[in-house]
Structure formats: structure tokens, C-alpha cells
Length: 99
Image 1 (cartoon, rainbow, N blue to C red):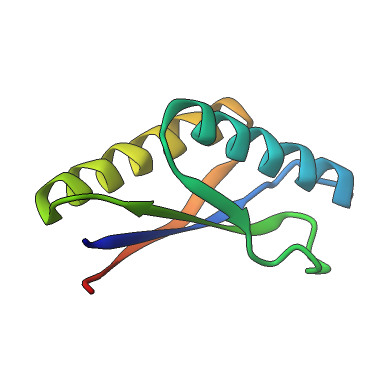
Image 2 (spheres, one colour):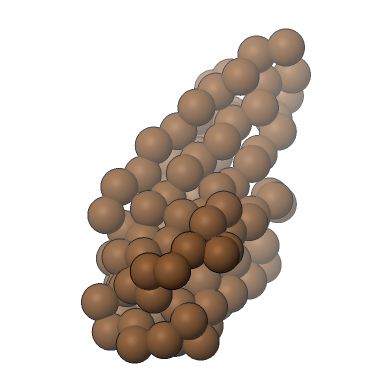
């Protein structure tokens, strides 16, 4: 059963505090969880830069093709969600692990 990991590097230009960053990250995480069946977490929670964040998504699927399509859908949705939050995805990359 293949496992996919999608890493999203966020840029939050309007963030002036940790609270601003957390609000964007929490909203992105909640919307992704609500839309897709996945696990999502902020990876650099203790970072001192308020205008950057790293979010990672983990997905398990029964086939490689299904997993690839799922990761692409999640990536498109994340770009759309962050645009609505006045943030942007500076970089995103996926890894697929086979058992």
C-alpha cells in the first residue's frame, strides 16, 4: 500500500505575529482535513519567522495511480485555499513511499 507525503512551504506576507501565522496555518489544515481524508501537520511550529510555515500532508491509498491523483488534487486545493487566505505556496513537493 503506497503512502504519499506532500510538503507545502507557505509564504504569509501579511503575518506580523505568530498569531497571524497560526491563523493561516490552522485554517489551511482544517479546510484540507474537511475536504480530504488525510493527516496534516505544521512541521516548523517553533520557528521564529512569522511569515513562513511548512505544512506536511500524509495520505494512504490502495494504488499508485489513485495516490498520485489524490496528491495532485490536494495540491491544487491547497493553492486555492492559501490564495483565499492572502498567503501563497512558495514551494510544494510530493514523495511516494512503497512498502
